[in-house]
Structure formats: structure tokens, C-alpha cells
Image (cartoon, rainbow, N blue to C red; front, side):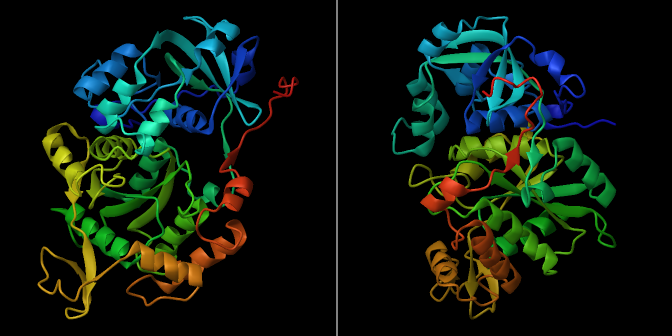
Length: 423
């Protein structure tokens, strides 16, 4: 069966099933960070198709200068692996070597080293984010990278085992395609999220569903909404991972979306907050999951005041012909007490009494544990978030220092029999 993702590229998995031990023997072992481990897994399963490994200098330069890979395929965000110059010297790693990447004291993947090079990180940050200001979290991340870049293909030798509740929402790109076929969905509109859903999110998803249905027959279901949550780096005050996934699923369980038009999954990715460029990346990512449409609202993937509220939509419009998904543009919405509905400034004339979906208000409600009205948040979602707070968040639905210290792992890795040195 064919699985065509971004740019018409075939989704190809790079996983050493059945003979992993043969791939690891005698290789230099290198412990990697959580971010790198997440990207290794995403590369190996095809989330980042057509990438099959970490970028070399040619692809990196082309992405930064022209927003495309050397082969001409649209790409917007650098996917790189770096180490310190001192580590490179002490390890003796050279081009054409293969090294074993380890995570959580277990083997994860083999990296076939194709290229070792230096690159100016400040230039990389400026071209990716449009700024070199270290107050931008993506800039800080980039400037913290090692001095030496290693490009090469990835081969997964130890498949992750996902813990509950993540196990209920983990699907590879190919599995997404298969599920959509079984559901009979011809159009799939993606919703990017790092939040639990309030009434405004629900309205946006339903508006996007209608837009994505387009010219398909209306006498049966041919369009679905994929809520694809991002699981990655956490900052104090973010929603905890478990509340995001279970809260989104509560819209389905509560009947606010029919189960045959709505699905929740997640992707391992540390947000770069790159605004317009990350919007392009999200389009690429969801095309690799089989989506045909992607909804984009106000300030997509932005942070602070670094980007205008609709900069991402403007860039998507410029690259529309090269995208493998069709963008669905949505305005900021609010609840209008006069109209008695969730609407937006583009169609409603009661802006003087409009009630915005304030993140500060919703956070205050959740912190106080007082069930809001249905217009703000569905009771099933609220209950799910509160249960997640008690079970996983040490009493809070938001990330705290205690949560970061004691959070459960999203996945575990099997310790291989030959991993006797304990590293």
C-alpha cells in the first residue's frame, strides 16, 4: 500500500526490527537529550518525511536561505544534531562512522555519520526566527546547541513503549493513513494544539470541519478532524501533557464531536515558536499523517510580540501552491451574548459586548476548581482536566516544578540484553 506524504514523498520507516542487536555491536555509544530522542523517533517513523536523518550542511543552508531542501522540496525548520567540539575530539567520531545513540540508559538508534561540519548558530537563529534576540525561546534553544553539527541517516534499533495515557493516542504516520482509510475519510483537517479545549477551540474545529468538507457529499461522513497535540518541552504554567490529551478526547466522549468525525493523536516535538516558518513545518508534518487540510488561527506558533497575529497565514498564502495540505484560515473568535453564539469580528457587530476566551480567566477557573459554564468549557472536559490534575499533576493541571521533577515518562525503552555496561 502506498503512503504518500509531503511533496508526494513515500513515507518510509527506518526501523531495525528483528535484528537490532546486529546493528549495535561494537559501536561508540553517545547519550542524547530528550529533544534529540524525540526527533530521532519522529525521523525513524516518517513524521519528518522526506528527511531520513539529521541535515547536512547543504540541506541546512538551503532551508535557511530558500526554505527548501537541496532537492527542491519545501522545508522550513532545521532538523540538526549537534555535539561539542571537545566531545567530538575525545570520542574520535569521524565521517563514515556509525554511532549508537542512547537515551534513558538504553540504546535508541544508530546514526550513520555522513558529514561533520561547523555552522554559525547566530545566523541560523536569525534566519529561522527572524531575530537573534535571546528572549525568543527558539533563539535561546539554537544558541545552546553544540559547536559541531553531525548529519546522517537514522535507524531505530529500540522502539519506544508508550505509557498510559499516551499509549491510547500514539499512532505512526502509516497508522494514521490506515485509520483514515478505515473511517472512510477523504478529507482530514488537522488541529495543532498544546492546550486543553475551551469553547472557542471547539468552535474553530467545527468551523474548520465544515470548510474542509468542501464539495464532498453531505449524506455520509467523508471528512474528519484530527487533533494532533504536541508533546515536548514543558515550561512552568503550560498545561500538563495528560490533561491536554484526555481533555481533547473528552469532547469526543461527551458527544460534542461524533466519534466518526473526530480523532486525537500526538507528535513528539519541541515547539520552536518560529511563527510563520513553524506554520509551514506544521503543514508538512500533518501532510505526513495523511491530512488534506490544516486549520490556522490567530498567532499560530508565535510567542510574545515577535510576530504579527496573522503573519503565519500570510506566509502560508505565499507558499500555498507548494503545500501538500490546504490551509483553512480562521479568525479569532469570542462568545457574543447578544447573538447567543460563538462567533468572530468578521461576522458579528457586537464587539462592544463580546466575551473573549481569556486564557487568564480559564486558568483562574481551573486553578480554583470551579466548573465553568458550558460556553467556556464543556463539563466533561473540565472533569477530565481535574482528574488529570489529581492523578498526574500533583493537584494542578498546569506544569509546576514538582511536575517537572516527577512527571511520568511519555515512553520507556527496553534495556537490550547486551546493554550490560549500564550506560
